[in-house]
Length: 355
Image (cartoon, rainbow, N blue to C red; front, side):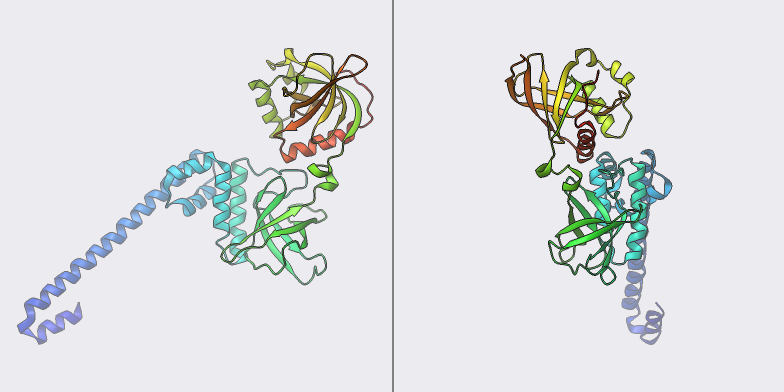
């Protein structure tokens, strides 16, 4: 503005034109500043709405502010949808974690993301010894442990693979064996195999873990001979809910079964052999191929270990007049497969016991 004032004083003949330019500049500056102020206020409103939505779902102040920083553009509606679908929330936080290019910044974000998963109660281990969501792990080459290491964070675990995000580049080829050491537990490192190298612009790695040694790999499921009395429950809503509670880690005592609506409809079976994939059962009641039921796997003290959904795949009669069923377990989570594999190993060659 001082320049325009000087020009007005030097050239009186064009004073009117220069005054118009000055007025337009003042007006334009006001419009720009107003636009900046409106944009800031809108962003502030959206951030506060996201914080209120997150706090309403039980998150802490720190976690709510982190979500507001990540999701303010989407607003409270998308935040509400993400918090209803914890897998979508995990994927969104994993995407944010993958945007960091420095390990220190990524670690700070991962710690806060892990806290969000804990507050949403979805950070439990998928199977015994498995790393937790957003846990820091260290990848090393077994042949050159002191030379080449990478720090990464776990963003997804499924039945076969572990998905990682790492701020550093990957120098190992695909199908290369690596050691994965957890930072939240003192134990021997897991042997994993690199399945997917991060593509340019992406930071996600995929490694696989060999489950054969634990007996839960479908290709290496071990059938254990036994002779155990057990019960089956019909596929009612109550039994389904009870199984879900058991899978989430809740204790299932015998008194809980007595209150179950389906419990009076239980039927006695004898488990002749069992693996994490299925079981061979003998029954004295009519069963047809394709029937479904829940198999109650109990400990000696009566506490229930697992309630796998069971499908009858074969039916035959034996010389004693009993019906022999070949069955398979359906929709079994990896954590549940581990429990069943442990049950099968503990029950091998067990004597017939009263139910």
